[in-house]
Amino acid sequence: MRVLHVIPALSQYYGGPVKAVFGMCQALNQAGVQADIASTDADVQGNLDIPLGIPFQMEGTTVYCFRCSLLRKYGFSPGLTGWIRRNLRNYDLVHVHAFFSYVPVPLVYYAKKYKVPYIIRPSGELSSWSLKKGRIKKELYLSLIGRRCLNAATALHLTSEDERVAARRLAPGTPCIVIPLGTDTFTEEEFPTRGGFRKKYPMLDHKLLIVFLSRLDHKKGLDRLLSAISALAMRRHNFAVVVAGSGEREYEDQVHDLVLAHGLKEKVIFTGFVQGQDKIDLLRDADVFVLPSYDENFGIAVIEAMAVGVPVVISNNVGIHHAVTEYGAGLVTSCESGEIAHALCTLLEDEPLRRMMGQNAKTLVQKQFAWGRVASELVELYQSVLSGQR
Image 1 (cartoon, rainbow, N blue to C red):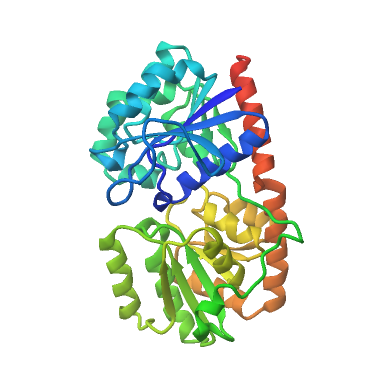
Image 2: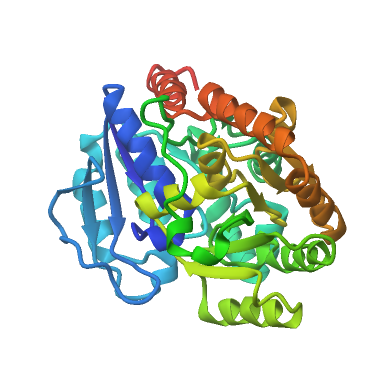
């Protein structure tokens, strides 16, 4: 089975969607599916320094990448369009990881022309929150082509029940299949040790560590988190907060200004974008992970934290909040700063509770979010599509 995965950009700075595609393709290849990626070289600023127009290996997956010189945000690439036209017939199925983007436009056209079934994973772009952002442009896109893309899809791949509810409002006639995203898990022998991150920041000695790890964007709820931290600092002193991630410069400046306005300069450490071993070290040293998003279709960073045994505090807008509650892997709140502060305080003051929820978090990831399990569900979906059952 040959499956082409298409995404507007490969840069890890775009966050969860890119990481998810690579993890997904690695797991699918291990499960016997030939999963390739086609994308562009768009980066947050400029273009990635990677081979163009020829296949190369990236994170264990065959990748075809093409120049994106205009409209980087939308993945506009004539080179990618031409490659899709010439090569799409070589694949049994297409899995598109975008919606409000240029990428689905040529892909859907040629998929229909060559009778290649396609699945769309909209990556949270169909939520009410997302649709309100740039509403006029999105309504125009939906009316011109978007609804036709959704309605002609063999299926929509959603990652949580909340995302499925949102998708059904726009594509009531298209099968909406919930399959979560995954993350790497660790055996007892592989389990990362603690202390790697704290070694770099001696001022963290004997302090409990609250970690926020995500792309810096208003929807992640950092404004509410910093208000909560300000309230928490009036009750407790032996903790610090790490804000890890990057975003648009204007919003990064706003977050720094909020930290100063709340008098939290001595409490908050900004690391910028982290990945690889640095990210594992950071999460392993965390005592609590927090993500109080206003809108989050899944929450990849949440399952990465849980995989290394960290209890989480997340909002009820994060797609996996039902699973966190069911397994007792953390505390779920609204986006009100008072609730967030109370949840953080509860965990910081109760070490046995943190240990218990951390263990529950590992169990949850192993049972529901390990890549091997997710790949099995995807293979079953692909087989049902190709056999004409969907």
